[in-house]
Image 1 (cartoon, rainbow, N blue to C red):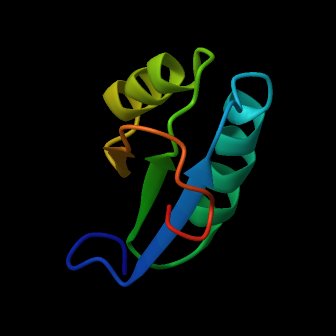
Image 2: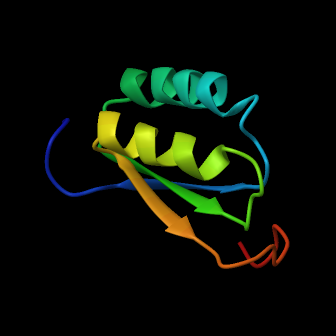
Image 3: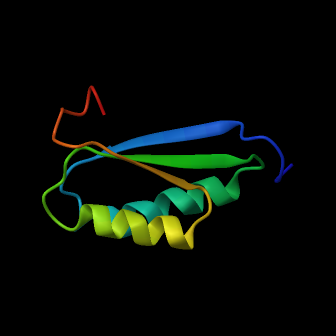
Length: 80
């Protein structure tokens, strides 16, 4: 059933997650790859001050399922 319309959107708010983001994405991708559905991953950068945004751009370049939303400042995970 892979291919076609997206049936699952995973929204992930992130703030200063440069240390854990690569491993988190690897694990999340492994789970999504095991499912017989089409999924997308929407990362919402909540005004990170470390290298999180740069890492998100790299992930987006490497993984076509990734969408990136970059908030101008830290609004808190509830808003993100």
